[in-house]
Image 1 (cartoon, one colour):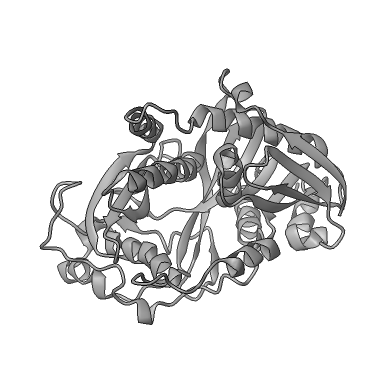
Image 2: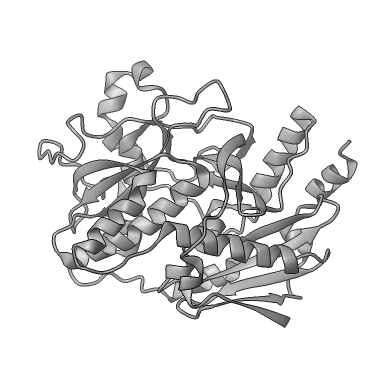
Length: 388
């Protein structure tokens, strides 16, 4: 790699003032993966409907529902995430949508929600960092395409401890808890249409994380127009027929019950990612399942996404300190996206966008080991070239 360009963002105080223009995310199309990971463009086949595992009031602990999130772990049908899926599903669906509507979707940057989440929270990232690949195409109508650098992701995952700490479940089992909570909290059909035995026996169903519904939205941060795709866990009620209306999506999350200040601090950090992920796709509600140390589901709490920054500030105020600032994140993201638009503008080149946590620097360098065609499918380029 060569030709490194640096983006320095410290001190963060430079992003505290001012207000970046944000375009409300609007779903333009969608796709599903079935339980065999087959892509279904323009399909709602895997759309799920929110139905809480408890029927009491939100936040009310109910020992009569002793759901254990480890139940069914041995039969878990896990998607093989060692496969690099690139942007293929997003591009195939966008192509199908444009062919169906005869309208081209305009954007400066096209990417997954996960990549934009990493960018949005980078000012406060203390552990993970990121590495992404970016390329540019005039034939695709001046779009920049941004995806995860899969090899770096796999290397980081393999470096993490896989053995459980004494007295604790394995990392794989704890990862399963999130998928189990989703299975306990969703239905494949509207609640009014679901048989009672289906609702009551969700704890016994085999969990499969290959199946997903993904929303593709148009949005904007500052001067950058974005097309972002990401999985949404469920809809509260149903999707409105009027496509201009906001969709009542629900994001499902799990976290350890707050028993001490250490737990509270970890939850406060988690709230940043909860907010960023939901904010980017226009998800208005987050449902958090609070669990015990060993994975027993204790209670659930529904939070409006727009209130999450306030909740984090209130938690920090109890200790007379500051916490993360959502407006600062947005101002930072607008600046970094402008940096990308300025420098990722040469066709036939792959750039590596990298951030090491706590470094205060994002770097951009040419990567000659990756072909642009691995990021931008030839079929999508041909579609855009021939698009009337």
